[in-house]
Length: 122
Image 1 (cartoon, rainbow, N blue to C red):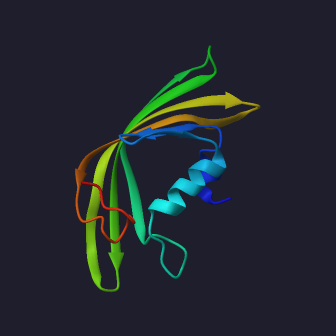
Image 2: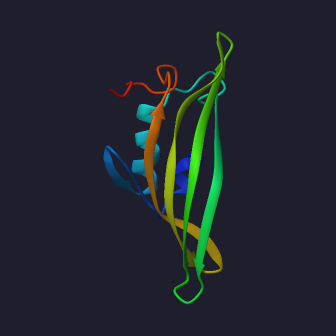
Image 3: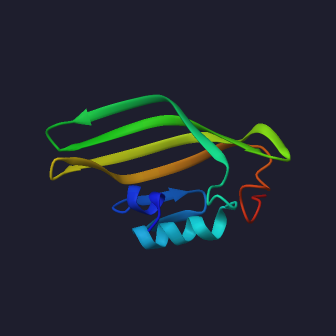
């Protein structure tokens, strides 16, 4: 299982196209939609900013809101912003560890994602 599947294995992951649950399903979704290159990466950097975290110690949970910007560069593609948006996250504290319970993604801006996604959104 890949990194994204492990990171979100206990979470619901959702956005404009619906939601998925489970590490294997999530990993498969990313493998089917995200272009990877010879080094096994999508040649992107995901920058998360303006994070606001609210911890509820009584319930053993937390929420977070943040912005994200995805940058991409390839040998024949100069560094550029390809997508930007917002995350709304929920976390559970289980057995002494924080883990994702839910991540909702809202895309605010699209650039040229043709070298990042197998199917370009309309």
